Length: 167
Image (tube, rainbow, N blue to C red; front, side, top):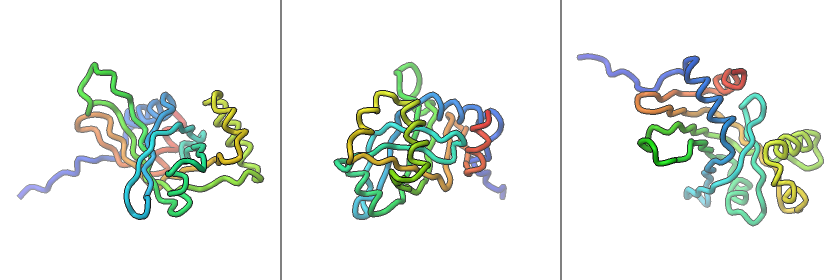
């Protein structure tokens, strides 16, 4: 009896280049959190840290997902190519990251660096940084999966994300 081949593979140089482009070229993602043990998803903006080992989001106290993360830091982030209607939807690249959330205290030095990085990428969010109920949250991946189209699924580690950031 032949052994079944795992369809999910380690990323090659082409996959890492596509991963880097996907992360850099998009600003919109979906965040999945746990709401009293039940899944909850929300669309939000994100900014990758330079090494792709973490992703910054800016969340209001009014958002359910911020409250969820305060209760349980386990979450997932999905970055994806938007559907433009020109090709089969499952051919669009997408990245799913299993993460933990870390709130960045406003009195910590890395808050200012994160704020500046976030505003460099998303300058129209400047007003929200003046509102007291918003916090910077760092999403730190444990592992992930890049789906780059049919038959092109790649398991990712934090080291793979770092390698992609250098492309």
